[in-house]
Image 1 (cartoon, rainbow, N blue to C red):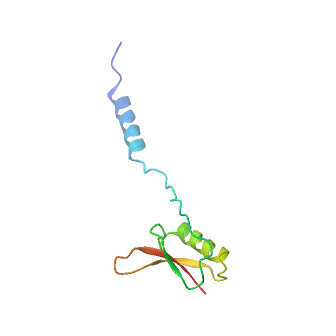
Image 2: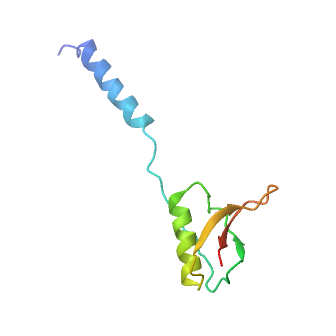
Image 3: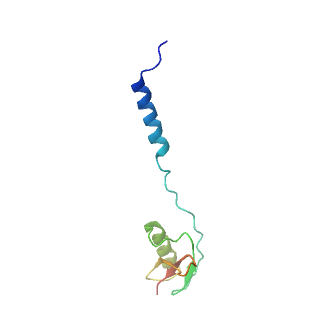
Amino acid sequence: MAPPPARLLLVLMAAVTVILAAPAPAMGAWVDYPSGVPCGETIPVEQCDPGDAAANSACMDMCHYGGCRRGGQCVSLGFGRGRGCHCKC
């Protein structure tokens, strides 16, 4: 049996490289938000990234269901203290 042509090996290696280099699908982290957070409060939640739309949506929902009509948003707690969800009054 003859060895496979070099071009076939090159295409096969390129395909394997592309498959291995593909980023893993993003997985949302489960955040167990407390219930009944009063308006104006900020709870520390490290996964609440101000630049992530899904995280902001979860924070907004948690605050809204807790009684804050304006919902909430992810914020930086500043000075290296992490991130949190701030429920807007």
